[in-house]
Length: 576
Image (tube, rainbow, N blue to C red; front, side):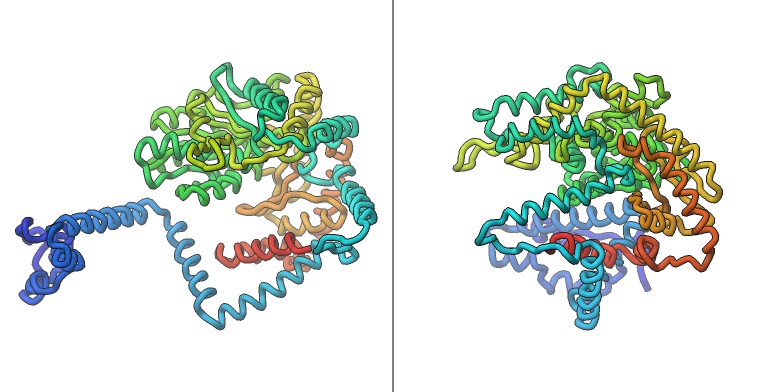
C-alpha cells in the first residue's frame, strides 16, 4: 500500500550525501517505493556521484551536488518545454523523430526511401531541365566562346516569360533604360568588395547612403534609426533575429529564447530560428483577416520571449498585421518587435503619401525595434540587396560579428557574409537616386491602381473569393471552396502564367509588378476562362498532376517526408 505523498517525510544527513542522492531519494518517495528494500537501496546502491566521491574523496559531496544541480535543471527545463509546447508541436516532433529513426535504422524503410528518391530525382530533373542543354562539368580545354553564345540565347528565351508580364513578382522593374543604367554601374564596380574600404571607399559610401535613404522612408521621424545592407530579405531577417537574441536574450540571461510569429510569417524566420536555436512559437493567423491576433500573442508571452515578428505585408495574402497593437504589447512586455517589410518597404510609404488609407507599419510605432526592406524588389535594384533597419545603434551592434583575435588581423562584419559584391550595392544606390521620390511615387500609383482593379475583377468571378479582403498593397490572393484551386494554377501555367502556389489554406496569388500592368486585363480574362474550364470538368478534373498533385500529397504527409521531397528538388536544381 502506497503512502500518501502529503504524509511522507524524508530526512538526510547532508554532510554525508550530496544533492544528487537527495533527488534520487525524493524520486523513490514520490513513486511510493519506500519499502525497507528500497530504503536500503539508497544506502547500499552507490549512485554515480557516490562512486565519484569515493574516487575523488578530496571533493567530498561537491561533485554530487553539481550533478544534482544539472539533473534538476535538466528536469525543470524538460518540464517547461513540454508545458509550453503546443499539441501540434509535440505531435510534429514525435512524427519527425519516428521518421528519422525509421529512415536511418530500418533497412527496409531505408531501401524503399532510396528507391523513391531516385524516382523523384528523375521526375524533377525531367520537368526542370532542358533536355537539349549543353552540360559543362569540367573546365574547357579549348575556346569556349560558343558556350557564352549559347548561354546568351538561353537567357533571351527565358526572359520572354517575365517580359510578357506573366510572372508573379520575381522581376519587379525590367524597364529597358533602368536596366541599362544598372548594367553600366555594375560594370564600373564589377570587382569591388566593401570588405576592403581602403580600396573602394565609394562603395562604402553607397551602402551607407542606401541605408540612410531607406531609413528616411521608414523611421517615422526618428533620426536614430540605423541599419545595414544585406544580400536579400532572408539575410535581413536573420540579422534582425541575431540582434534580438543578443540584445533581448543573452543580455537578460535567457538561454532558451522564443519568438512569436504568425503562420503567415516568411520562411526566412524559420531558417533564422533554426540557425540560432530559437524556439519559434507559431500562431495560426485569423481565418478571415489572416492577421496575427494581438490577444493570441499576449497569451503566448513567456519569460523567454525575446521578440514578436510581424509583416507589412505578409507574403501569402498580402495582409498588413496590426503593428500598432503589437507595438503596445512589445513595449508592455519589454520585448522586440520586427516588421518584415521586404515586399512593402518601397511601396507602403509612397502609397501613404498618395492618400491610400493604411495602418501604421513603421518606426512611428514606438515598439518597433527592427525592420527588413528589400531594395531588390520594389526598390528596383539588381537582385542581391536588402536593408535591415534598427531603432538604434545598440540594436544594430548586436547583429555585428567582431573577432579581435584572428591571426589574419582584426576582423568585423555587419552582415553574415565577409566579402560582398560592391557592384550590387552601387546598383542599389544608382536605382534609388535615379528614380528619386517622384519616380517611386509614379510607379507605386500605377501598381496600386492595377492591384485594386485586378482584385475587384477576380472577386467578381463566380466560385472565386479573395483571401484577406481587398488588397492594401500589391498582392491579389484568391481561392475557392467549390474546386481544387491548384487545378486553376496548373491550367494557368499551361497558358504561360507563373503564379505563386500557397498552402494552409490552399490558394494562389499574383504579386503585381511594373511588368504586370500592361497585361492586367489579359490575366483576368484568361483566369475567367480557366475557372470555367475547371468548373465544367468537375470531379473529372485531375488532382494528381502538377501542383495539384504535389500539394495534395504534401498536405497528406507529415513534415519529414515532405522535407525529403524538397531536398530532392534542391539536389536536382544543383545537378548540371
